[in-house]
Amino acid sequence: MQIVKIIFSLVFLGTISTSCESNSDVKTLTFAHILPASHPVHKGVLELQKEVKRLSNGKLLVNIYGNGQLGSEREVLELLQIGSIAMTKVSSAAMSNFVPEYKILGAPYIFKNKEHLFKVLESEIGTSILNKGADYWLKGLCFYDAGSRSFYTKEKFIKTPKDLEGMKIRVMSDKMSVAMVDALGGSPTPMSFGELYTALQQGVVDGAENNAPSFVTSRHFELCKFYSLDSHSYVPDVLLIGTKALSLLTKQEQEWIFEAARISAIKQKTFWTISEKESLRILKEAGVQIFHPDNAVFSAKTKSVIDGLKSNPDFEEIITKIEKTK
Image 1 (cartoon, rainbow, N blue to C red):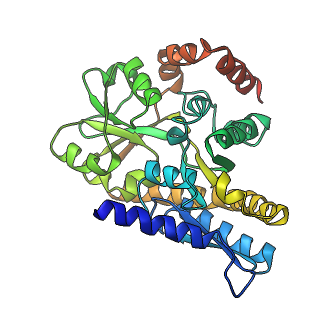
Image 2 (image 1 turned 180 degrees about the vertical axis):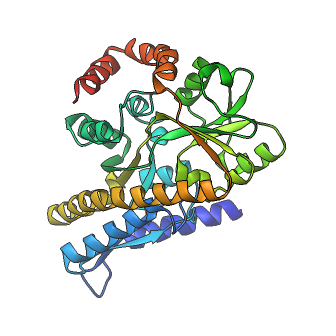
């Protein structure tokens, strides 16, 4: 009964937030995500909120519910699909459950570096993937920087793939992450991020992989003192608007949203860079040892994952375009 009440209240909230108020012409869109207010992605969303208000002269507003107030990534996506909320931010890994092409963005070592990543995301390749979500009522607006993911462990550095042999490494619950760790010789262990601290503490897993800001905010550095910056994947975040909410907006209002998203994405990159540098400083002060391995060795070991994706002709075409992007 409690779950039904929560769902009903969210539906009601979303309906009001995407409708015109009876005594004014102001429209308010509900934006929900799972991150804390200190996170650089949330700061990007605040820029979106500010730009929407500025561009519309206050006629269109965005209400933000962060820190998982309205549910997990999966739950928020479902609320977006049925029109109960208007907008969200999720990992592109979560979107791969709806749009298979998003899997490619999480492939190991498919991007040479951050510059290569955004040249791809801000090209017709990225735009095409964003647009495919509309078939599932999830229209992509832009990509946000979520850094690169690297291994952190309790007992030793991961200097070569051989160091992963026999190690249980927590990964996200998606096939790409599992395939990558498996190809490197480790034992991939999918579990929710919220369970990871206890799992590390109790020895259920030997390590995990994530970006520096998440390593810090989760306080996993209290248990893991070895961080190997292999940057095996750049899994971007995605800013989304539900097609049902979008249909309630005029053409002009839609243009305000698209432009505000574009501006916020530019500013969010800066927030991420600052956060990343600060996070590495915090890690060093906390006694975490940082190592820069030879990525070429890791890339060679995970080539089978890329080859597996290329067995799909549509994926092969996109991967070829990414590889040719300079």
